[in-house]
Amino acid sequence: MSWSFIAINAVLLHVIGIERFSSVTAFLLILQLTSASGIMSIEICNRFFYIGKGLPFFYGVRGFRTIFFGTCQNKMYINWLVFTVWFCSVWGLSSKERKPA
View 1 (cartoon, rainbow, N blue to C red):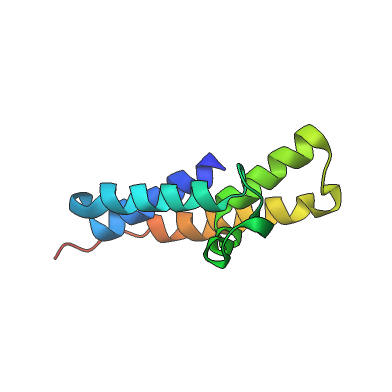
View 2 (tube, rainbow, N blue to C red):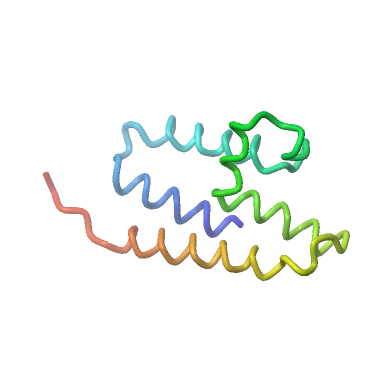
């Protein structure tokens, strides 16, 4: 879970620069924390928070629930697949060199 977010942060730092990095990253972190269904179930949240299903933190919370409580064991491969796709795609973007302006 943290490797995906670190990779996302690396891409954001690389793309938008240090000036706007902290505000965008803080917004992304707050969005992931509120939409991951770690505190409140996604089914009773507003439809806006369904965006969390596209972010890696949602699948991290679901993976922890599977490991610790044994729920959704038949969906554990989806958690690993999402993490792998997020990490590889963001890592591929961050490995490209930034051209000076």
